[in-house]
Image 1 (cartoon, one colour):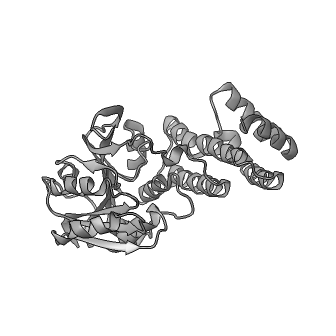
Image 2: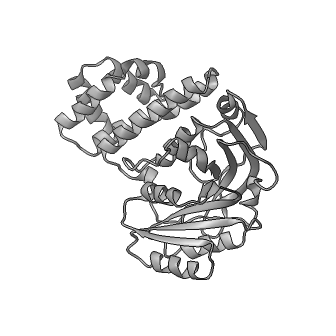
Image 3: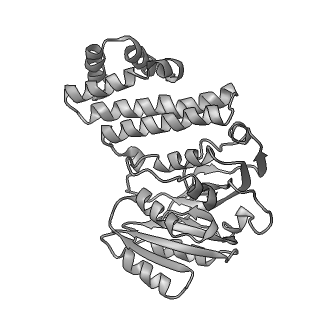
Amino acid sequence: MDNQTISIVIPVFKAEATISRCVESIFSQTWQNWELILVDDGSPDRSGEICDRLAAGDSRIRVFHTPNHGAGSARNFGLDHCNTKWVTFIDADDDIEPGYLENFHIGEYVHENYSIIIQGYRRVNEHKESLGECIDLRSADYCGHNCVEQAFSKDKVFEYGQVVGKLYDLLAIRENNIRFTTEFHLSEDHLFYLTYLLRTKAIHTYSGTLYNYIWTEGVTGLSRQLHPADEMYIRYDKILKVCEALKSQCHITSESVIRKIDYFSVTGSVALLLGCIYKNRLPASERRKFLKRLAADRKILKKSFLPQSMVGKGLRTVLLHAPCHLKDNLFRLFLTK
């Protein structure tokens, strides 16, 4: 397997306004050993046609046209067609600075099998003006049985859950059948990333914010959309399980790291789930079905569901101690506003 070439997978959907700019930024890379896999995810606009035109002039680009099943499915399809050791992901509405691929340093160092290489990003508008949000990691190597805890405690390696900005070992992905879930569409990339970390043997981070995470005015992101409650319960359940596995299998004992993981996997996920249950205005039988499922996790919730606001603390008391029908009535009163 080619150790010096990076596979780049881009899911493409309704990206006719941005995909050319994205691919042009790949053409401009100082590291030119790459292959690009463009997966047209059944896009109804001219995205697929533009991808074909871009590929016509460069043999390193392959285009696949698939029915629309979402970004996770498109990324899985791309993974199945990679021919190199290393793979990274870029979103079709983002772009990268010229030194981005070189900043993974695969030509400079021999990185272990089952490792992950991470660099930062910055959020910008369409004019490349900074919007303030960025993650710039320190350059460091975390190895050994507690490499995950080291990285989580010393930098924002846990919080940085987006699938972009990272170089994955395709051998680890294939040998462990690590896939993007298609059961929900919010944080599915974070789930993929955390599942990969369960198997990693080393984490290498490099300073630099060369990935441009582009915010387009007027476009509502997935985090602000109202998602089906069924999807959000699956999200809660799967993220909780992978985070519990991380704590045990990666030998995490640091209280500050555990609090960080629990806040994401329990406090944040439960709050999101409850919001979707009640803002979707489900019938009482459906609402109470979800509340009973949460009740089955009471031991975990008692330990790890720790909202900080006064309202959140009140919701915690109700969730842990009130009978199901009373929980439902109180949540309906406060969460449907």
